[in-house]
Image 1 (cartoon, rainbow, N blue to C red):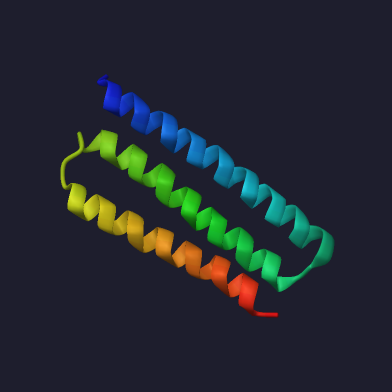
Image 2 (cartoon, rainbow, N blue to C red):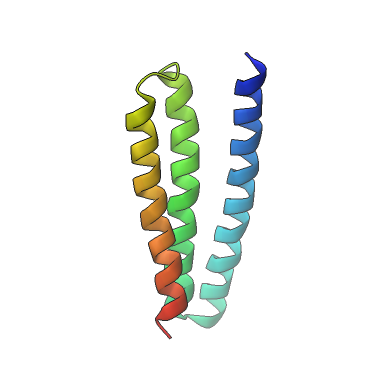
Length: 92
């Protein structure tokens, strides 16, 4: 594995761990408060993490071919995740 691929995996794992921490915190907050905002926040973070994991796995499975499609799908899922995060903030 090349250095750039190792860095990609390292940063993807870091993003995944941080994202899963945010998912856990928002799910715990939802369980404690039953606020819909926390539910939407956890869905948003889950989508962002799923995009990161899915992109990393897909990149290695396809040997980094079709990167435009791969990144487009990543950005679509990540954008929907961020829209959930934004919605959770403004629904008050």
